[in-house]
Length: 116
Image (cartoon, rainbow, N blue to C red):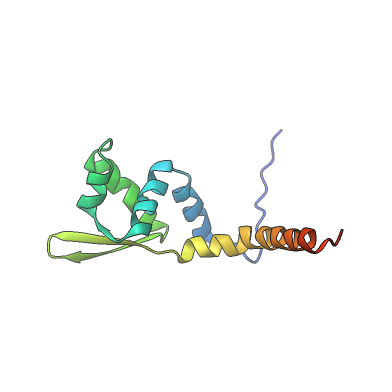
């Protein structure tokens, strides 16, 4: 028999699930990389991913927007999109920063000769 438990902590943020889901796709990570370099229009993102049709790119962008990773605004007929890094920072602060701090401490101890 398989049991599922809803294990949550005070720090759980429901939008974190959306961020992880959005980051799970290599296509969406590629779109975020493009937006990290500079804000772009929807058309420019479609042109930068010629292996995907426009509808597929728009579906991926919708997932990114729902997760709060991308913001957009209309300028005439164009939609200008930009990276919203705050959700990624929230993930970093919760999941990565402690490990990075431990690695820096270890490197510092190695540098000073402290066996620790």
